[in-house]
Image (tube, rainbow, N blue to C red; front, side, top):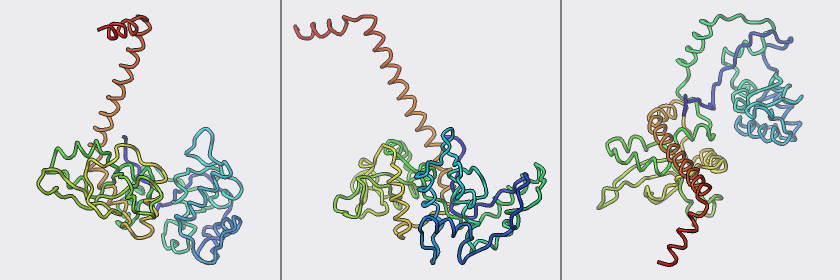
Length: 317
């Protein structure tokens, strides 16, 4: 539970290289809505490029291509060893797998108004001091638009995901419970009458909190679910990749509001301390169980007849 690192879905500015590259055009050549490199890459995979393909769908296509061709670095699964097609597309022999979405931004004609793209393929090296790098990075953070969307991927959602046991801890502080729950994600069993739901569990976002009539218990109002949800029915397990993809599809279909980086980052900061304490508590409990199990095995090795003696005394009582 270290520093929060976001996977973004917008305006991921391009890094300025300090190494000299081979001569390339400063701007891309565009064939309609996309760069020539992107269009040719998609066409080589048999994709119809007559109409614009969204950046998310292209990044999904590339992810499948990487998996099919076995291009992940065996020593570091976060890196991709680019083949000729990907080198032509990204201009690099290696890229970070989670950066594919950001790297695609410059290949869309609609994004070419950004002045940062003037330096995408500079022929001569740019010498930038450390202080200038800090200042540039800071200015980008300040100028980042509030409408920049966050990618709906596991690394982002887990920062806002609340297990049942954590929710049960949060409810002990009723004054802050509602504010912490709103906008967070929980995992519940799918409605058995919902034939469109493919998975037994689904990720849902909390949109409201109210008291259960006649009790001090809380009920949660969540997306994609008609009835109010009791805390007791929440899942205490991790969500799956398939469930995360299902959540993303519902957002694409307009069933949920698309969250921005700013919204999710602010929410994650309010939950970070609680999530860290909860994670440490779970780890301590797990460690204690492992220690007890190790001690029990040691006792059995030291006193091999202890278990048999206890069994006999119990049998003849």
